[in-house]
Length: 395
Image (cartoon, rainbow, N blue to C red; front, side, top):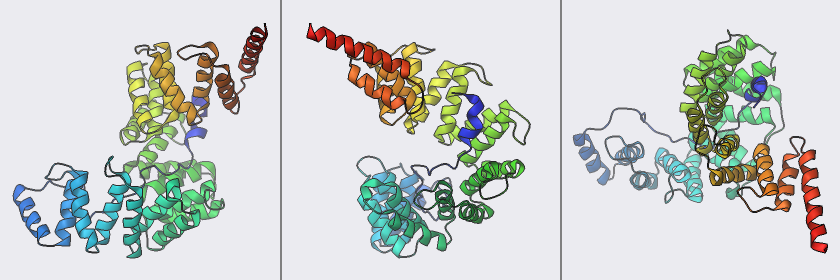
């Protein structure tokens, strides 16, 4: 990757995380664990029909507070409270059906419970339902149906909804691109300390989108977001330190912030760290550390990391050479449209390395990669080999 392009590439309005839906709780997941005596009392109340106790038990099992964590038990207790009409339990039940493990995950069930809570007026359920409709093709809902619930959530005061609407207006996604509306929606949430909105507002000031470009303002909002623990804000503030934009250039600080964002699950930060350690940019080269961060990013669906790790495995670059795994990673990334993986995999098929030689597959992959960079030399070679094969068949 070309680090000189890092600022342009990184400081964009991020599409929502895959797991943007939010469980609703009346307690903090990181709060103190329950004592055994408290659990016994709670169980008695729950079995006696207390919806509050049923909700608390569902929450305890969801986050492993005083009991062994179990999505199945959480579903059981939330369902009891949900069937009694508790909107928070209905929303949390929907959240578990949307994000839970195999055997629990059931998107139609998630939509059903989100809808019940949304109709009851839960802003969080309205947001979750709208997001599910917008970003889950299997729901077969129109953008208008998703936007309806997002806008309902915003009208009810959901900061996440304002942040999402700001992003949609900024990207022209599901809504006409409108810098002023994007800035307005985002500012509403940012002023009320929504960390995602603060990070996006920093991007607007960086790009001069909906407001006059002001890097000092951008850093201010990135810092607010980062200080609140938002991985996106941490990452973007790190970019500013790496490039010395309105702050002293400080690679140590940038790496610290990238690491915080990466540990918070931000896949782009994980990929950046992998790249930094692979190429020794601002840190000592460490191929094992690079591979570790690439693998974490791949788990989050980051295709460029799969392409990079595939190259390391193919070359045996600081790791044990593993051609089958390299081919597997390139194949997955190529299917997702990653051009470097398409190029590398095309070469494998052209030369019959690690796979059976297949010039048609090679031609297809080079043609896809050609949308991003010049592969005329490689295409010429493929056509030449195809002509030779056709000539040989005619003899």
